[in-house]
Image 1 (cartoon, rainbow, N blue to C red):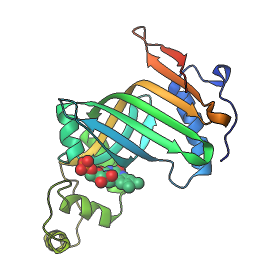
Image 2 (image 1 turned 90 degrees about the vertical axis):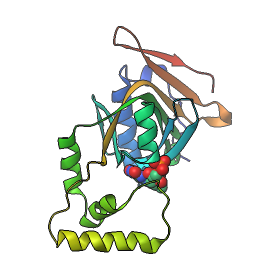
Image 3 (image 1 turned 135 degrees about the vertical axis):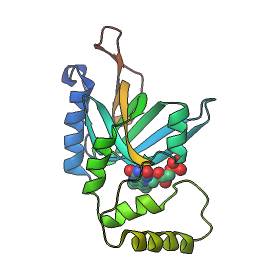
Length: 203
Ligand SMILES: Cc1cc2nc3c(=O)[nH]c(=O)nc-3n(C[C@H](O)[C@H](O)[C@H](O)COP(=O)(O)O)c2cc1C
């Protein structure tokens, strides 16, 4: 594993988004799928669930991923908009945790992203009732064939039940693997003033 270098407070950006941008660029150079991220959600009474999604963008307005609004994660986010993301970039010995609230992106942005997807992926998004029970693979093929027939080769409209979410961070943690388990951890927390407080944490 590379990335055994110590992470020093002096090396950290004061803005966690800038720190993430820096680490993400290094992850993109070192890994095939740096955008793979675990998304944790929870029911209103606190029962958690977690699954992988793909990060499709990030910036001042949050971290964006796409899914079915009617899926289990979509339903949980609707009822409880608190969520967490976890990246693990093993070749760099790094982990990044992000916590915050989640909202849907605007329809026009979901439309724009949907339009960039391959037709097969678009058809899949329309045909799938993600997270619902499916009797057999054949049922899914039938739904796809029916859809193809209805569309007659025309464009695939984005289903209203599929689109983007943005997580707006209130906390970030940057974790760097160190020798002899002396890992470095720094947690950023949003302050009422709008700035970020940074604490080193015990590993
Ligand atoms: C590497 C990887 C990336 C994935 N990316 C997405 C994604 O971007 N959006 C999505 O809805 N599901 C994605 N999935 C599938 C989800 O992990 C999950 O099975 C699905 O969204 C249903 O989750 P839910 O029932 O908790 O809502 C991905 C799976 C893997 C393994």
